[in-house]
Image 1 (cartoon, rainbow over the protein chains, first blue to last red):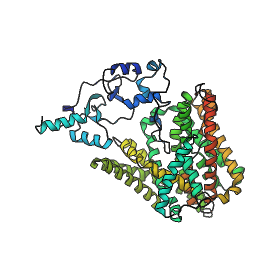
Image 2: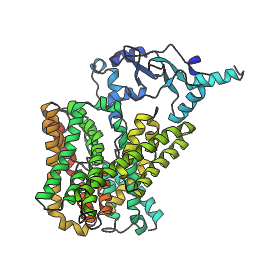
Image 3: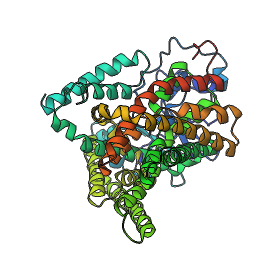
Image 4: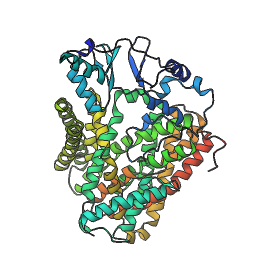
Length: 156
Length: 396
């Protein structure tokens, strides 16, 4: 079975220039911050924003730039309760400043087994799905796969 | 102390000293290096001979691993992202230090060309740990900080290339000093080292990428990745190719040909910290304190010419990239610390040039300690002068 048959096709996306304030407003009623795909004007997947990326707002720089640097001390994490943020941050910071640009995605033609293995390999529970042209067409989560397996076995 | 006990003691003492020195804002690498000096044969003599003899093995493994990781920088997407300022400045500050130190050793100290070349190449390295620590401490923000971070993130890649080329030339000069067809031999030996390293790296990357489809777990991924890194190190040593270049090309080809290459680099990161600790402690333990007094002039020449090279190179790079004036003036000053990559290169030089290796290594380790002390102060000064530190922060 292919993931395009079971993936979620109605996905909330944001643009590179979506402000932090607008991003937070979209998800204000959610009880968790989901994995949010970032797309360009043509719908191509440009990046991903997770709650970890929201924490980058409290950092002086985006840690992604130092990913390949050896011998760095581990970051202790920001003390978000004691860092001063001004109101303007909400309009000044845009999604492009905080998003992760190196994103692992699946093509819609991938099988459920391939998706499941990729999730195990990357220790992730959700991946964006793109078509052959790199345009975002959906999201696939580990629960989508588990639910489908249960369905095939007649449990539900 | 037996070898296993020595490793256990080193890991625990290294962790404790790193925590202690972190309170006074020194990076962990400085703590590991100081611990190595303290427990090494020159001071405490706490480590077994067997453990000390494994320095070359540990440094080859660690250097292979970091070169593989640094190869990630060579993705097409990364080059699109970093921008011309970072590219110009990083290339020219690294080559600036290389040229200034080489010329200083040739014309001020009258050292043979191959020694000058090796010192020059080692000088191109920068240690980001201390620089990043200062940026975190002062929460500095702005164009200067962004450019500085971009430069420290990529400049070790240039250093590895410069060092591999310089080492190949220096080895060819050293081994063929009395032979005929001198220039031809130097050129062909250097070319073979580089082309051979690229071919090896590319083949291994293609193999790893194609075999990874059979992987089913994180454990298998880690074993396969580390197996291929070790294989590349071993084959490079076996065929007298550059360990650094082979592994860097391995990482560089892998990041461009594999569909999901980050998993390899991420998995290797899980075993880095204890190996890196051991590498720095053993590097410190290899310091020969008895040679230090004889190295006064060499050390001072290296310290000054490297800083001048970094400052001039960064300034010229910023000028070519039409960067802001604060970047032109102060960025070189923020690139002074040296540590892991420089020490690793020095360890390689120590093994490759037995008669002058101790002099090279001891100079680098002593200047590393000095740079790690003065470097952060210079970085603080540069960040303040560049206007990237908010006024309420403490002064440098």
